[in-house]
Image (cartoon, rainbow, N blue to C red):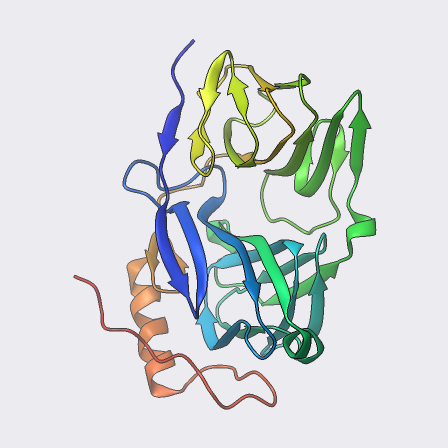
Length: 290
């Protein structure tokens, strides 16, 4: 049995929302198609305060937003305008160019609310990096759930544990929400080559060793693992097939070819980009990193 890789996240702040971000990391650039992982920490907003991520661009990836508490309004340059509630999946494939806005819906903003959730990016296969954009919303009731002997598995995206999500992933993917009652266990099989666990809350062990909370634990390939809940445990499991080649990430752009990132940066800076209907404010291009 090989030891898992433990990735400690770095703390970030996105428009006032505190974030923990274990991916990307110098230790691990991807797990299956997942190249970016943001844990939006549970935050209580008073009336009049909330999230407002202005218009910004993406290429070469799909974003997936999944909330445990709160709501987000998603708007994009395809014309989508969707309220995303806790337990729903908001799925956006960027293709060659898309822009979107994410903000707290006005009714929630007026009354105050709690926000808690995850946003991940999945790199598109190389043959689909330059494809068309797409958006779909999947209500909580559409996601398959297995609930047996104190272990609940909800398949957010992809497939595993004899469950398959309706989210239109572009490559073999595993993204499951796990809830284990105290003293229950779950065998994590090798049906996907790459897998990683992230414990959101609770005390748990992996093959008899304590699992840190709020760290991404990358499991050894080709080896079964057993998750045991010492207390009620809430976690997510991500993974899938390895990427079909390395990816570059620069700001909100993901690509296998660095030239596509440079082109996207120039286009956004010049205002040559699809616009979100009804939106004028935007996040400007940050300075290039060298």
